Amino acid sequence: ARAWFDATMWSTKGCCNDKTNEFFAMLRALFGYQDTPTFIEWSTYFAYWFLILSVMVFIYRDAIVKIRNGTARYMRFSSGMLWLSAFVGFIYACGNANWISLTVTIFFLILATASVLGSYDAFTRISAIAGARKKIMVAVGVGSFLLGAYVFALT
Image (cartoon, rainbow, N blue to C red; front, side, top):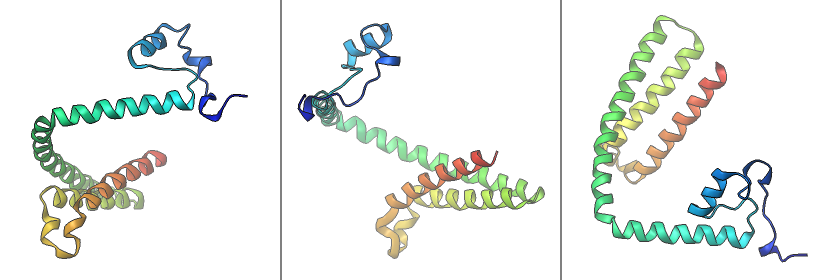
């Protein structure tokens, strides 16, 4: 019996064999793909890429700050457009009133409003939630995903 760190974690030889399939052979050559990785190979692989990405972030930290500032401008624009589309959807749902469309658009409008307030730093003006901007924005993202999954499940 092999030691736990040298035992195969999973096997994808049936669909993704890195010896017979040319695509996965290329992935093996470029990125170190294994169709039957052991724990030691898997942990070494992720440690290697974590180290590489950490060095890249350190080297390009000035560019990352510029991108982050650009992302803030994009968030302000896109959250405004999200709110506008939620408002138009709410108006449309009021004209074709049924409980599902009204509920979904009201929740969508609430999430979009929180997104707009968060992107313009409005939460910093409310002392009770001033430090929770990031958590609120994550909650908006998760809520939007769950609302989308709910709508998808209804259709």
